[in-house]
Length: 133
Image (tube, rainbow, N blue to C red; front, side, top):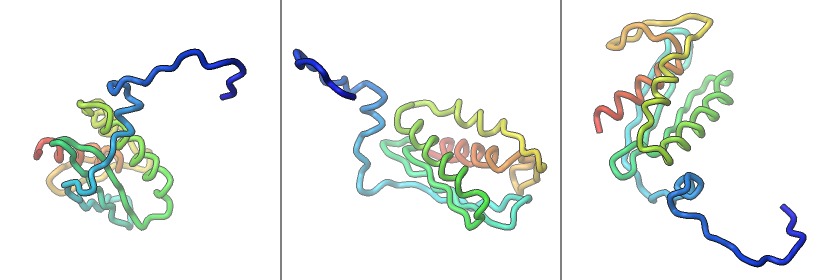
């Protein structure tokens, strides 16, 4: 942004703005858990790490050796983590993930039953993690 005139005043954004909350400093050490899933329609396992800050989920990482998944996994990781940092209630994210249908087919998973997609599986893991904390 280019400023053409004199600066006559300025204001500091409130700490309550989502932008500021998103930029809150991360603690050097966070507690969390890593979950391993092996989707029925994939040859590769996925590892979902959910770290907590102040008793609620703060960030999420998804890792897999599947080269076809890297771009969407990175995107999902960043978006879900951003929402976790600014919203006290992330149930809407969980619900959206659980409603994703994979056109290549669903699969059954031990203890969880019918899973419509890997994204839905991630939503279920996140929901389980929140219920445990």
